[in-house]
Amino acid sequence: MPIKLKNNFIVEIKNYLKEKMDNQLYLHSIGTYDYSLTLLNIHLDYYLNNLCSNNRNNIRINKLNKKKKIYNQVSIASLLHDYGKIYTYEEMIKIANENNILLSSFEKENRQIIHGLIAPYLISKDLNIKDKQIYKAIRSHTIGSNKMGFIDKIIYIADKLEVNRNFEGIENLRKLSYKNLDLCLLEVYKSNIIYVISKNYLLHPNTSKIWNNICGGLKNATK
Ligand SMILES: [Fe+2]
Image 1: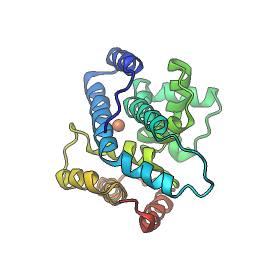
Image 2 (image 1 turned 90 degrees about the vertical axis):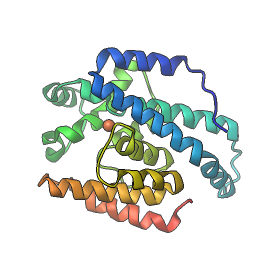
Image 3 (image 1 turned 45 degrees about the vertical axis):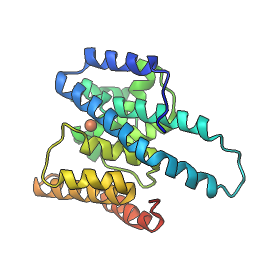
Image 4 (image 1 turned 120 degrees about the vertical axis):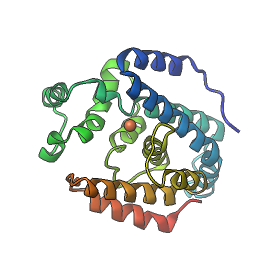
C-alpha cells in the first residue's frame, strides 16, 4: 500500500524547482518523481520483505518507518537529481574547485556527468538536505555506480524512462521496470552504452566495471 507522505516539504521543493528550472527540466524532474513513486509502489513491499528475511544480524526493522524513510529519500532524490543543471558548466567547475569536490579530468570535461557529482554539495548548501543515501542516488544517476542499491536503481531507471522520454524500445523497458528492477537496470544501462557509442561520445572509464557489476548482481536478482 502506498504511504501518504507529509507532503509539505515535497511541495516546497516542487515550487522551488519551478522557479529555478526551465520548463523542460522542471517537467523532466516531475516526470522522474512520478515514475520513481510508481516503481516504489510496485517493488517496495517485496524489497522490504526480502530485507527482513535476509536480516542475519537480527536488527529490528520497523517496516513502516523504513517505508516512510524510503519514500522520502526517493521523492527528494528524484526531484533533485538534475538540480546541478540549474548552474552553468563554468559555475559547476568553479563550485567543484572551490569546494574540493574530487573530479577526474574526464568528469571535469563532461557536462553530462558533472551535474550529478556536484549536486550533493548543492542540495546540502541550498536546501539543507543532509542524507547520504540521497547523495548516493543522485551521484550515480548519470553513469551508475559499482554498488547500486534499491533506491539508486529506482532513480537511475526513472530518470531514463519517465513519461517525457521517448526512444525506440522505451515501452518494453517500461513494462520490464514494472516486473523486474534488476533486469530493467541491466537493459537500461545497456541501451545507454549503445546510445553513447552510437553518438561517438566517450564512455566513462568506470563503465565496464559498473556494467560487470550489474551483470554479476543479476545472480542475486530480487524479483
Ligand atoms: Fe535527469
